[in-house]
Length: 306
Image (cartoon, rainbow, N blue to C red; front, side, top):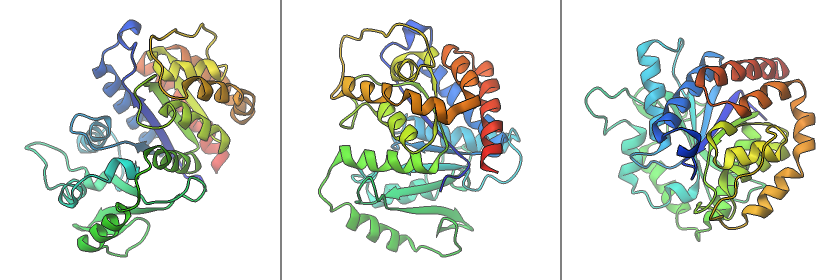
C-alpha cells in the first residue's frame, strides 16, 4: 500500500557543470525539495548509503536542522524513510550502524538525526517479495517502526549479521530496494544521475523510473540538471529535446532507456492532470520554480490518496 512518501533520487551526473551547476547546487535543491514536501505533510523516501560526504547524510542532517530552525512545524518523528539496500549496509561494522542510528557520533552543533529517521534495512529476498526490518529511535532506544515493540541492540545486530551472510548479489539487492520504494512511494523526484559506473546491473535512476511506472506511480524528472534524469524526462515525453551523446555508458544502459520509453504512454495515463506541471518542472533548474510545481503535484496527489 502506498503511503504519503515522496521518493527523491540524486547522484552526480557527468554533465552537471555543462548545465551551469555545481555539486553543492544538488545538495541545496535536495534540501529545498525535502522541506517543501514535509511542509505539505508528505514524508521523504531516500535510498542511499552512509558515506560521510554522501547525499543520504546530507539529507538527514539538513532535515534535522530544518526542524531545529522551525522551518518545518510539527513533530520530526520518522520524517525521512531511509531505504537501506542490503548491498549498502552489508559491509558496515555493527558498531558503526548503531552509532549512526543512535546519534553517537554527532559533532558540536550537529542536529540529532535519530528523531527524523526511519531506517528500513533490506534483507535477503526477491524483488517480488522484498523483506526489510524498519527501525526508529524513540525514548532513547530502538523500536520497530509503527510499533511500541523495543528492539535490543544485540538482537538487531544478530539479525543483520545473519542476513549479511547470504551470498552477495548487488544488482538484485538494489532492485529489491528500488521495487519496494516504488510500491511505497506514489511520487519519485529525480535529478542529475549517473550514465555509467553505477553500482547495479542497470542505470539506477532509469531502473527506479521503470519500477515507479510499473507500480502505478508518478515520476518527476528534473531535466534541467542533465544526467540520467534528463534522459528520463525525454524517454517519458516530458522534455522535447535531443538526447545528449555521452562518451561512456554503463551496462545495459540503452536497453533500460528503451524499456522506459515503452512505458511513456502508461505514465501519461497515470499522471493525467499532473502532466503539465511535470513537463514544466522537467525544463527548469530554478529551485523556487521547481518547488512551485512540486507543490501543485503534491496537492493533487494528496487529493487522490484521500
